[in-house]
Image (cartoon, rainbow, N blue to C red; front, side):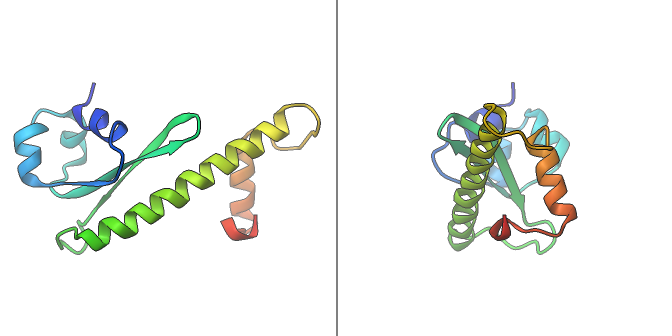
Length: 124
């Protein structure tokens, strides 16, 4: 199991992983080796039912250091993403509990169809 994934899942807020941290704590981590990143931020997506996923963001294009302001903006994004996932789960539950039949069989097919129609989250 990845030490990095463990730390992200159990973290209460986004955090920055620096090259020094990688050398000190994650030098043998498989995820770090595959991503080949040296400075990035990570956060877990939590929902009311528990862990919903994780997001990693890097600075490869700009090469700039990730700042506290970047982490603050990332935190807001994480909160919105977690809320969207929660809403989608609730929508899928509503579709599958039998009171209402819908042509979409899964959350993924519904989201894909909305993307094809050019809908964004605010229009849904």
